[in-house]
Each structure stands twice: as structure tokens, then as C-alpha cells.
Length: 163
Image 1 (tube, one colour):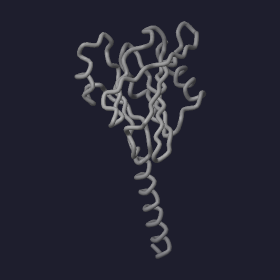
Image 2 (cartoon, rainbow, N blue to C red):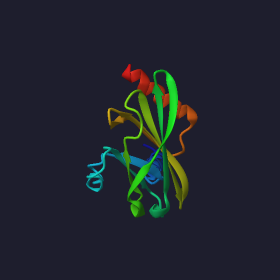
Image 3 (cartoon, one colour):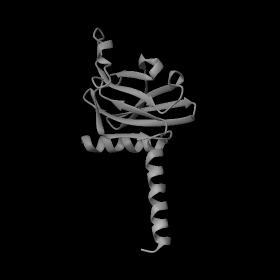
Image 4 (tube, rainbow, N blue to C red):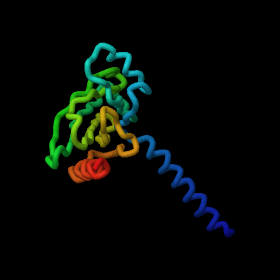
């Protein structure tokens, strides 16, 4: 192998490694089991089951992260959008819980949108839910705000999979 090819291959490997490392260092909104994040212990006396835990990551000021959510659904062929409330579990660490706030019937995707001031960034996560639980394999963590088309496509795909 010539020296030029060896240098090119080495440069490409370093560039690929840098991209792989930086992909994990971008602001995002992650989801997980309430048990995994230990949020169930905060909700022992609550009527509604905690469906999932949410946390923001890769933000220098987690205490000031803002996360909002809507439940986007398709019920009996009619598109619906409902605001959802996130309950602070550890606000300094940007950890929240989401309880069931949408009808059981239909196909529902939660759109969680997070904003970080430093570094200035926005991200979304689309979470498919069914029967009081989230469907990890049908959920998407995005490193940018979700578009209307992405949300509509996620709802439509979930509806198709449930029919």
C-alpha cells in the first residue's frame, strides 16, 4: 500500500471516528422505562400509571431544559392532537415522567420536544404508545425538531401496524 493511500485511509478512519463520537454528544430527549430511571417510587399514590420516563441529555444547563409534549393520535379515522403534561421527577437533571393522558382507543404517538439553551439546540422524540406502555422499537429519537410530516408518518405507521 502506498504512503498516500495509507495516509488517506488513516485520515478517513479518524474522520469517521470523530463523526461517531460527535453523534453521541448532541442534545436529545431520551426515553426509558419508569423502572429504569427509578421514577415509579415518586408515584406510589397516583391513580394513573407512569407510561415512560423522559430525560434530556447533552445540555450544559439541564435545570433550564424545557420539554413539552403532545399526544398525536388517529381514532376511528379521525386525527387528534392533545397536550400532555410532563411531571418533574428531578428537574435539576431534566428527568420527567409521563402518565397516561390520552384515550386507550386508537393509534397514539407522543411528540416530545426539548429545548436546551447552552449549547443552543432543539430536539424531538416520537414515542409510539399502546395499551399503557411505550413501544421502543417504533420510537424515534431525533436530534432536531420533528416536522409535521414526520409526526403524521409515525402516527400513520403505528395505525397500520395495529390494524
